[in-house]
Figure 1: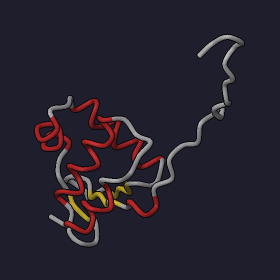
Figure 2: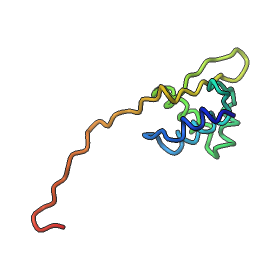
Figure 3: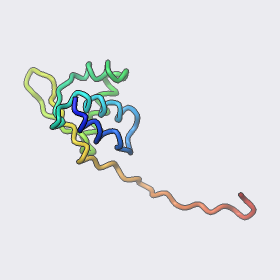
Length: 105
């Protein structure tokens, strides 16, 4: 377990609870370089999520740069947790300021 990687992951925002749970589970397994290789089944057990939900979260985490994967023939996937590379998706429609109607408030 790397407290360095875990500490870098906790403050990250812009993801669902499922995605965050998978990221934290991977960070908990990672060494100080962010490398770990738990099975999807193991992540599923640790997070109380379905294997399909874990797979979806891993795919999303890779797409936003928080995670990198590499396959090992006949073995589980190697994950590298990269919180410093995380770039959350931007809102499609920026929030606009609302002005109260006359007499509201």
